[in-house]
Image 1: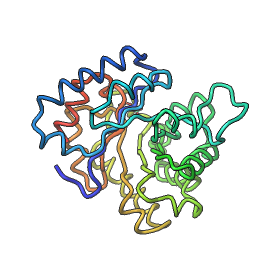
Image 2: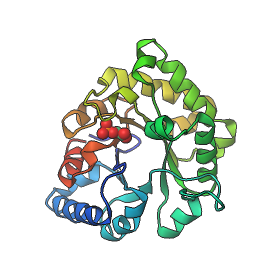
Image 3: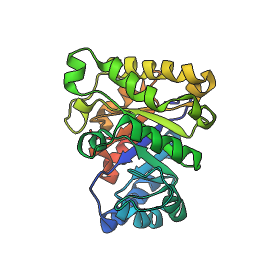
Image 4: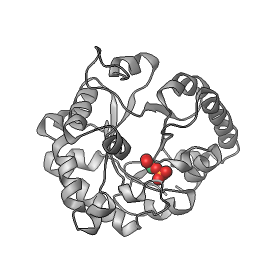
Length: 259
Ligand code: PGA
């Protein structure tokens, strides 16, 4: 399949795969990619893996020569200072990392991430020249009480302020991840995904129409090699943010094959 904004496959390893497992993953990925026809690997134009922070150096080293980028699962908005346990843009850039996930629902649920801290991270990291995947999505209760668009609209609205307009040059991606679909095996149907993705694109259009057209919107929540193609067939789904199915090289390659 080819898509106007390319096809994006981002793997979020969460708190899995230490440095040794990361190195093994990339060695297996290299072997798997080598036997794939070149047309297949070219289809998925953008591959990004988000290992735990401690495995980033190993991932960078062992992925040399592979068509993948390495990102961080979180980063602070300040460049340095007394913030125990945090990573900053300059620390990441020094190691060769340019991608950061912001506002994953697990950070919102368990670590006090708010719309306001998502705004600060996104704004500051983009201003520092990094690339950001901002995650949004509603819980099951919110969907069942018809609040999906209010919640996603609020999450986007607090981050997508006019200050961001100059930075919407393809370096900000949005991931729509319904919380009820994450790690549950309950994938959103293509029409459920498409209606929220179309809504996200409309909100982006309100900032600048050009930005809306060039911003990839990824779907996340129990994406597998089996359901990926159908999700990708939706006009506003430009790829996937994938947890479980990104942990093994074989299933990550399965996503590429089915893209
Ligand atoms: P999952 O996780 O693919 O395991 O559902 C997705 C995510 O949390 O990004």
